Image (cartoon, rainbow, N blue to C red; front, side, top):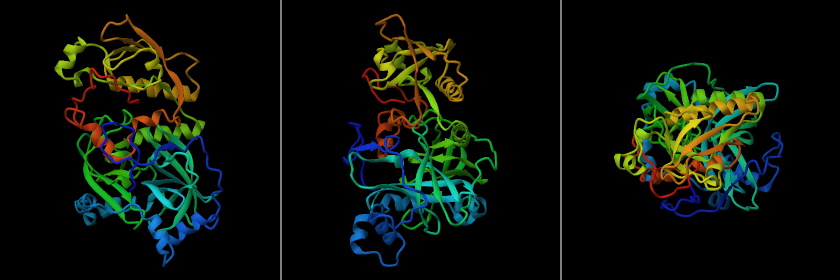
Length: 435
């Protein structure tokens, strides 16, 4: 895969092109019924991936992702398909590969899951990762989203639902044959801490299935949104957007970067709101918080706080946000949210999600959504700020999602025990990493 610009000074990855969000500034206007012969670039893409003898020049420009030695090791450690085939054979036909193209060059690879089929429109809905919508800034090349099914069929895709807070994207594709669908509601099951799971995806070049086994834990890996869970599945980057299934065949969530999944119940809530209202908004303060008991003793002492207090601690603040404009800093304590005492980060984010549903449904009654913050250095008495109302397709939400796997790993090196429960803010240095 080509490298991408990270924007983080601690990341040692090679610098790539300057990226910008394609959506919503530039919406797709091309007809989904259009054929692959509508432009020279699309003809070359079709020639390379489908025709028997693609030209050498096209091959050179289109070649992008090849398995590294580390990836090959992961594939060799994959789960035993023979033992589990009966379990997930009903899911695999619905797993597709999805790639974004600039001109004829494949830029970002993900996987996806077909979740709906409209027989009257011959149109399928595919769930995947919003990471696909990053492309080079000021590029004059055509930008295309292309889906590849298990049999190698190429389908032009169009954006539908875009949620940068949850890093979700749904695409619409037209097909002359009915595509296999996985109903996310078809089999309900409880997500249990430490349960066995399989992260799945599909390779764009070979159309072969990718699968990686591991365990799922009910804790946040401190990357992305608060609802994301932690998985030990050592996936390749092109598994992002594919399903995470249990050993009984239940789709437990969608793989995001490094195999950490967003749970299915959260996804279903988002899709239902999008289906009903075609727009989702969230309250946004521009700050992330952490539980007090996750901080080390020296931070308790420096912040002069009690580990049993009814509050959470500000972890990071987004530059230019309402929190930043009002002087909120890393280490400050969030005490109440709309008059409710905050006792955990989970409670705080649950209140934000509940408010998002009320705002989207129009049931908030125009009331403000306010938090009260106590500065750790007593620079002022209290800070009271009201949340901005921001659509989930606003790029400010996407800034908390690393764009390539290396950024997740580099960010974790700053923490005491990556993937564990005692991660803490990088106090006392101010930080600007929005959530």
